[in-house]
Image 1: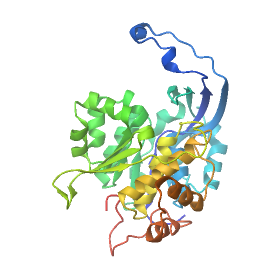
Image 2: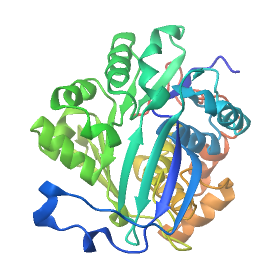
Image 3: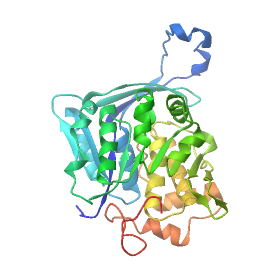
Image 4: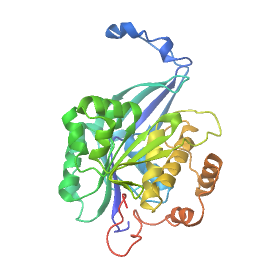
Length: 357
């Protein structure tokens, strides 16, 4: 394994139980009876697939030629999963197997409008706080992703990244329901980026008492995924055209080639494309579009880890979606990463390459 600074991904490692409901949840849920909710959905099909936020993002980063490290805990039933991830190009040396518990499990039903109702069993994820970033040699972590995991571990890992000077992306996503306002504000403090979907950002606003604009003022980058409307990337500090303010990059959604099969893991795929592209030096607009293409490649797949695609496939879908090729230095920046160490050498002289540069 290369000694170059690495990308470290924290978060859940799980098995996903994916079920499909042949109808619309909104036709069954009665809004004025939510205080006594009792509803059952008969599903047509179920699949058990490899999942969890940390492996989903790490697998996506590996498709872009990085060698990300998973920093997480899994159960006795994840030995084969860990081996498979290693074969796919993920550094699993810091994926701890707990022999006395089972791997976390995610049970989700999806309706015909791609809405989801889910429950999550923590299992071995509850022990993620046993892992510490202090175990890494100084300077060996270029970027950390603090993703949904045990709430105690999320607080701990964010604190450690701040204390150790490790830049980190704060991605509370599914755990916004468990984290309180103080936890969320603490995670934001010092983060290089906050990312979530529209609903999750709404929960963060409610729990912290901050508006979207106020949240954008707290972090250098605020990324909000917006489903069929694409995504927005708010950059604090503005630009020469907008001095002193926030510049917002609007990223249109990529084009589906087939039907949308399963939204599970689509946000994770977007994150992998966005982060990998930024680490390769792509501007925010192009990086967001690459993330959007990675997202639809996942959406067209059953399960959260998209079928293996090539960069040629990605470039073809990029041009198809946005009417222009990702070519020249931008395309070569992505191609140049295939098979290299976790993070490329800085584009400018000395110093570590920054996600924000």
